[in-house]
Structure formats: structure tokens, C-alpha cells
Image (tube, rainbow, N blue to C red; front, side, top):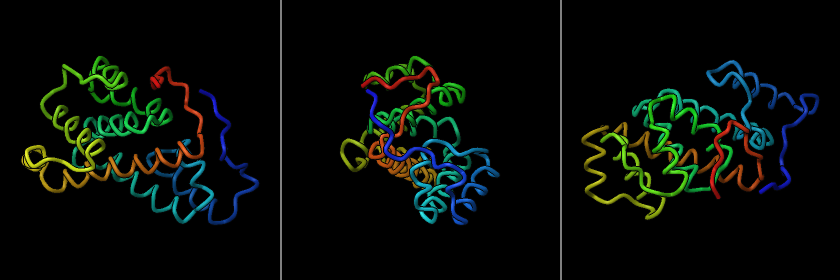
Length: 185
């Protein structure tokens, strides 16, 4: 479905000093550019500053590592039907080692059958958190045992941060990026 983009990228000539500062910080960091999730957020530079820093930590330095972080991002994108995040992170998840068949299963809302043990735990944890708004004791204990408290907090953070971005882009109707990985609606 094509909806009009409610908050397209602002023209550089329209940026105020706070927006310029945030663009500079973002483009000089590991992202290297302004990605679609941040186009709507540029309207609130102070929020962008904090969101961008949190996201940079969670995506690039999370205690659960890049492979499992990408899987948690996909789980969140799928839950929120967020096409932009899906199109960006599906190929990254595969590059990080998540099997393409499992990515496709998640896209189809089918439980993947070939996840590794740590991936299965991420899948279970994210599913429970999104669908039940909590995590049962057995899943919690397994996650603490495998990832430690810091890892579990980072995992929750990934889910929360990408929920936030999904809400922003779904409301702003940010158009998806054409990477060849389309979210099934």
C-alpha cells in the first residue's frame, strides 16, 4: 500500500542550527547518513538526539551482539507491520547469520523451524513481550541464564526502541526502502 509520506526529509536549507547539529552527529557516527526513521524525528532535534544515541548503542554495541539484535529488530518490525525497518534489517539479519528461511518464516508470521538455540530464545522472548506485554518466568530465567541481566535489559531496549521507531514511521507513513525485502501485509 502506498500512502503519502506525512513527514518527508526536510531540505537542508530548512534546517535550523539544532537540526544541523543532530545531522552532523548522526552522519559522523556508525550510521554515516540519515536513515528514513530519522527524517520525521528531525522535526524534534532534542528527541532525535536522545533517540539516535540510544539506537546507536542498541544497534552497534548491544550486549546480545549484532546477530541477535538484528533478529529482535525483525521481530519488532514484524509485530508493528513496519515496512521500513523490515526492508532495512532483513538483509542485515541474513548477513549477520540469521537463515533466510527463518527471516521469511517470520515475515509470513510462521514460527521458524531452523533457529539456533540462542535465536529461538530471542524469538520466544520477543514474541511474548510483544504479544503478551510480558515475559513468562521460564523464558525470563532462560534469557538471564544465557544473556545475563545486561543482555536481557539490552534485548528489552531493542524491542522498545524499534517499537518507538515503528510507531513514528507508521504514523508518519514513511515509505519503505527498496532493498528487495518486502514485508508481507
